[in-house]
Length: 419
Image 1: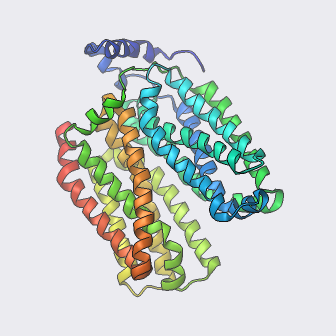
Image 2: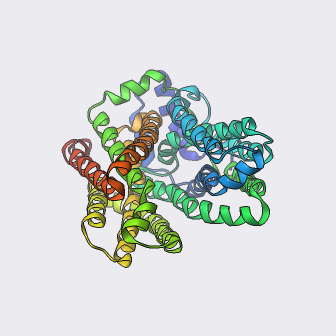
Image 3: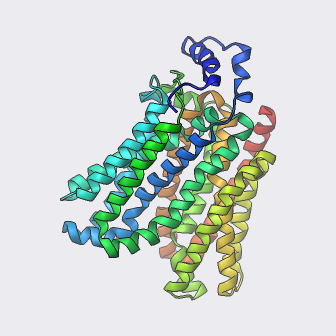
């Protein structure tokens, strides 16, 4: 559906007021509580997430055949992942300002079009240069989409339903996590790595058609500029919240990056059991993501706190307890469930804390997460060399404990003030 929805005709009053730096009329401020939710559009965004994250993860399962075909080392081929992450970080900070006068529907469709082009370029890349070009385009789409996801959810469903919409959108991440590695490697062996990326391009093209049919027009507010990022960070409680979120993601990626050596050396299981445990993690993460919506509708503050506390306790349990493989399997799955709540909770937090600049705040959050991934993996690697996998898990648990204290001291009180 390409026509403007009825509620957006009223919302354009608020948009015009924002463009002129004039407070919107009271009726416009109440629109978000009265319009009908556009669940079909939310579903099309979930498909977009699935396509983006699947494309992001595919090289991890296809790295060996990609390197052999292109005549490069696996380490060099791995730069395809680095290029995507680096560009995603930059795009997350710049996209709101760069597209501030463009219909958000067109921007989202452009991201999906970039996904199609990226997969096609990678599929037909004759050398590393074109491979990296395709991955750079993916990074731009990935970072831009994540920066805008929470703000777009706010415009598609009424405010009380935003957590549920975000949990549906983020379920695309969990599904892609389960799908990309095992299915990508399996199909790569059957039909070749280039054919896998061609299939990804076809799925992305189908997503584009569905989004074209379901996304409503969403007029830009025109207020986001580069300075807006600084202004948002200077608001009370936002810097603390961003730092707490970064710590939670740092603790998680320190844990998850080194889960395989922990299972092999501490738990003492073989590769088949590792694969099964990681599948359990992915399935539990999917369930946690879907459960996050109803949990957040009950209490955002409690959900923000419960996730790092549970992850901290599970990490400490994995280190301190003389566990059996079954116990470790259950604790890893519990971690997956808890982490499923995290991205939905923090995205919901920014829609409550910075509703008027959700896109800029979303860019800051994405940048913080990308930085956390780097810190968690790199810092975890240094600790791993000194103290092994148990040392990494201990450090991750400590980081998560600090994050929980920051939520108690700096985030939850501000939420009560906003309420």
